[in-house]
Length: 186
Image (cartoon, rainbow, N blue to C red):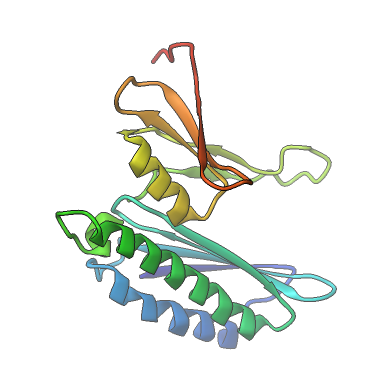
């Protein structure tokens, strides 16, 4: 696994790098690919009180994983964020096992072709911008992506009618879908 560690308001020491690398290397067992095609981006932030650890794992398969934890102790936060990621992976693996054609998590898990840009100016309202390439997928696949990323919504191109859709988690439970009515031109 190729690991990139970024510090915000903190200097990333060798001790922090070693702790993060050691914990993330234990996650290699979840992937069939043992080469550097799997990338983890770790952002460590410090605040006046506490730290925040964000980990995103990009895979060459079909799912990316993301978790973040805020904790008073940096090393406890690292443990907790790894536990969250493992929980997401086990949950996805359980869903995949329910299918007739059982496949390993490593073969099921895909890089979503996300390109992330962050603005440097604090006065701007837009704090993050992403562009995505939408591959046609079914609603069930979109829900799996949503759960794997642990986000509240997921944008996808419906494979049935080729409409851009958003699936989201409802506060009262379940999922909702928003479909775009106008055709998207190339």
